[in-house]
View 1 (tube, rainbow, N blue to C red):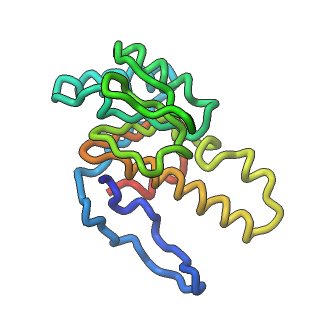
View 2: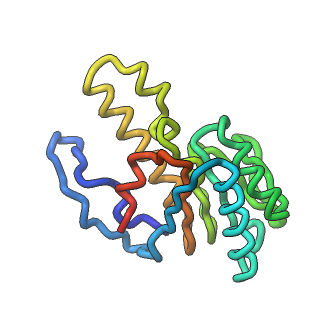
Length: 183
């Protein structure tokens, strides 16, 4: 899994103590994520499709792929990448499970408990992760911190679904959380 250094520089634990986790390394330490910032959605779709094709040539089977986006509003970007790569796909939801002949596409909310050889977490744009609508509804600093923490954890869970290869993409400007992922 790709769990390296995704928690950010400091975390407040349940006792209220700040813990510096910038040097935390997972026991499932794999290669660092590939993070690519792109100029527009079309370029992102082409880049992800190329990555899927490259992984397929390296022996990754359709069911060993997972593509994750923040919410259903970005599903079209993932579908377009799979279509461009000519990869059959299935959209996962609460009642649908992946199968052996399709790449799985899902929102980050449904990622927990899944594992894939190759994962692309796409559309990690500013205002998408963290989601701007959530930030705008915040009333005080404590609530704002909670929004940032849960949004960061959402990205972390999606990224840690990768066993061997992790691609993270964004259309610029990128999410501020991507800076936490750079090794």
